Image (cartoon, rainbow, N blue to C red; front, side, top):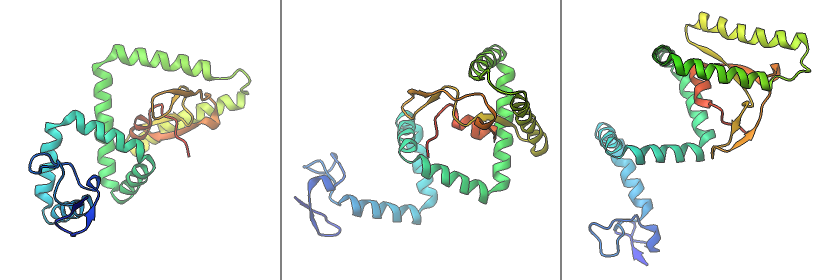
Length: 208
């Protein structure tokens, strides 16, 4: 047991953050709850210093930072998606500017990597052909064409790139990267999304 120097409550040692630099037992003198509250208040009172400190730490610990981001995203996928959609709704101008920057970057990448672009396009066409069932009617094939036409029309009208996305990916993977589904190239499995959202989704299987 250990007494927190802030709230004065006796708690298990595991309730204290690890700190091997200044304490004999290897844990901080304040419990996790008090430490979190103190840190939160300091960040609110010093927003500029907090941002600079966070940036310096991320730059110095890039791989660790990216790993933490990936782990957080996997555990809080629904929350992050909801927050992102809410931010886009509140900031339409910033969203449009971000989409334009992303589209410009994508065009530059495609131009600078023609061999890879052609290769991936070939693989994509083969996968779509294999996923397109023979029992599709002419009307349903026409519907697929209309969906792709809709994506081109939206791209021209909104001046940002739109993609046709497979709701259930042709080669869908779960959050661990394991292949778990094979979606079909059929009208009811297609949707039009901004390119940035489609790329972010990638071939991950989104479950509700």
